[in-house]
Image (cartoon, rainbow, N blue to C red; front, side, top):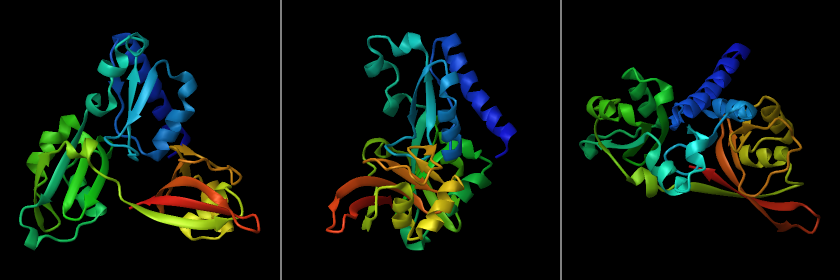
Length: 262
């Protein structure tokens, strides 16, 4: 992404916030990736409204932004009735599964995404894709939900059927792999080394290459000290939650725990 493209994305955020104020109603972005979310956080000083982020479920990586005009945000019934993230964002959760399980292939995230792209759908209109054995959950803009249900009938050689599902919104459970280890300190480079099984020097390269995001924001400093419940995304290695420290060893090293998204 070049500098000009970054400026255009930031301008789009500002324009959406101004439009929300002018119309007096909530406006929404498309689904944003980590780089775009990072640019949004860099633009906050120019945003003219309040905002919320949501991707269809807790800790979604790809998220929409709702730009909320002050007239709505400060209304007395705002929290309960105006922009409840789980029911007001224009996000649909679609559940697909093999039509005949005995003929189903073992499908990957890339297989499902490829099938969606083959339908001519823009990536920005698709959120996270979650796979649980023979069940494939797709978060998408509500406006294209029926199109996907009508047209996504095959993934690779597997015939699939789809339906809208509320499970995604309140019952879909994130699976984790637990990682425990001992580090010299809770500096980011130490924690990245544990998460990726790389050396501290290799971890520093990942950080300085802007491939590490903390809570959707790029962190370029090796010396950043991780805080409990920080969500750490590492390009090429996945997403982790830092659970905090569990005490020290006799030599003063720190025992820490991570949860890796499966």
